[in-house]
Length: 281
Image 1 (spheres, helix red, strand yellow):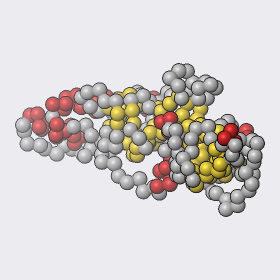
Image 2 (cartoon, helix red, strand yellow):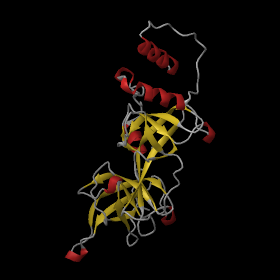
Image 3 (cartoon, rainbow, N blue to C red):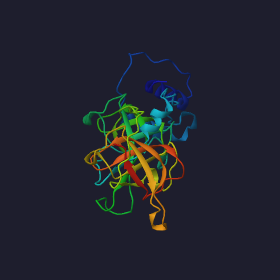
């Protein structure tokens, strides 16, 4: 149902007069969000016309691509967050959102936002609750992605295309780019010894990882890591008079100069923060 027809049905409901189809003026690609919000307030007492988004359809994306889109990453300084989720089309303050909700964005056509554009929604989660820095990096949690549904000059409404987790008030936006599955070589070079990185963290500060999970390590392109690079993961048992214990294997999915996001391809035991990672090279 178009926005014009929603207003038309609302007017008929309030007046009690039989509805009469309004004259058609052709499709509109830009809807004034201010009018939508005002109509939502007027209709707050009419549950039949609750402000809900169109039912989300299937993404038709392979599970591995969805998994890659939701992977974590690591930053050592706070990212810019000019575009954010600021609310929803509800008659009360709503802080958590899921597919089916209409959410508001703090930007519109004045900022280059247009109907149909897609954005990731992300959240910054520092290891400790203090300023992000070299001694306190943060995980970037991808909570999902959205599609712009209606725009005004300074505000927009969006629908939720896919939720990796619950979307929350204050999550920030970045342009959506479909992730690519990296090519993984069948060759397995010898793991480098003596140049170990560490298992750091995962989404929501996870401290235990198994096959198929993602974690972040402190080795990146500055250390010779490339997308698709393979790693062996060890636990250091030498203090107990043992050799290094080989926990399993992982592959680099996303690489930055100082860190990488790895996906576990083989695990003999749970990976824990502090375990050693060795690049096959």
